[in-house]
Length: 117
Image 1: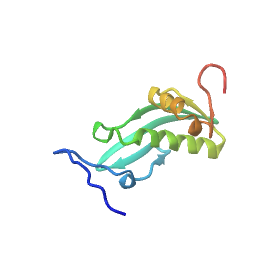
Image 2: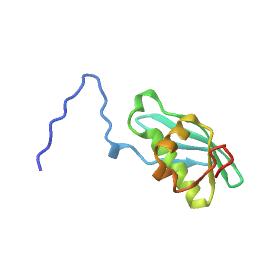
Image 3: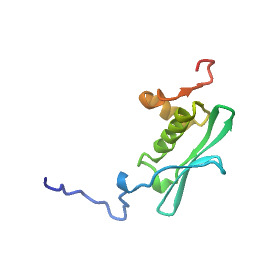
């Protein structure tokens, strides 16, 4: 197989998906985290019994556009599914991501705040 040439943009930083580390669940800080290139992306949450309330997603501007926010939400889905929890997406980013990725969202119970789980 031949390698394809990739056009580069001066001063641009290329990030390959394979280079991005895994998301960790920092339960002591109540957040999913991904550290890359000295920067921290996070999805903060609150656990209320069997409910995992997604509060806020923060991705540094230098890391935007690489699917990192989605990886944080996917980690929340995985935890909810494994532990039989219901996700409550109060964070606008997390809610939008779940709405756009129905297949992934279908892996866990979600309380959309409309009285339907």
